[in-house]
Image (cartoon, rainbow, N blue to C red):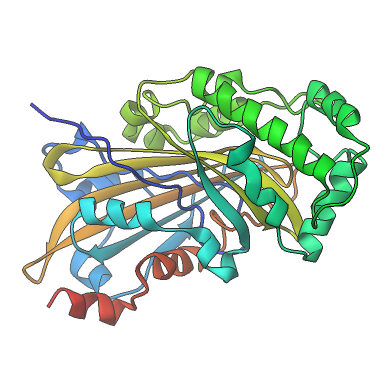
Length: 357
């Protein structure tokens, strides 16, 4: 009988990897693989049908674009690599990872959130850096730009909040508006998952982030099946779910424009010491609709030492047919996973091998 454990983990990730993507969600293998060996299971659902584990352990991250999908708004990148230590140790390392500490990711502010947030949880907005990206974010808010991804009801609340001046880089009225929006959307996610989130219908056709996620998963049948148990227990693309999530918000750069985003991370242990994690950026004020990163982690032994085979799938849902903007925690360039991996572990492949010696 498998005993599942829930361990704290923060989004990664997504995002966290190259400078081009918008979504991040991470999953690690659960109870599915009681009998399959890791390499065979990897081949069963991923684009990596032939992997030499010993060779992979000596090389850098192996990355490839996922299979083409019908919608040009859906982008996917898969990667795999071997890391030192057990899956549980990898999950613990991800939980300590803070994207705001890595300047190349251009995440300006990052903060965890409780399940019932209030204005104090978004106080960091007052201390945003005075760069061009943040100033663009302020300008878009003050004129209620059609590029803002908010609902019609949310837009009405900004009109009522205008008038206050002064303050830091982000004026008090703008801070108050986004504090209200982010607080309400976090509470909606906690109570009803992505299905309860208001649409993006402020200045165009109604878009729901939950529909975007579900549309992507319908086109990724093998991945959806691999992670069906975990996803079915989360609020990703559906109601609240039964698994506890780790919530957070960020202010980051997307194509030289500031964006505030809300995320939720899930994980659980599975058979034989494996893990699954899922990280979703379920709200973004602009640039991309939603981002999802999935990881599967299997315990393996390399040269007699405990290691982890990691599969990572990042999926971005862009606006229109253009390339998805750069979400610093889930970027879609081929070199992204190397960047993300090094930011998490701060080790070269050679260093990672010596750490196990």
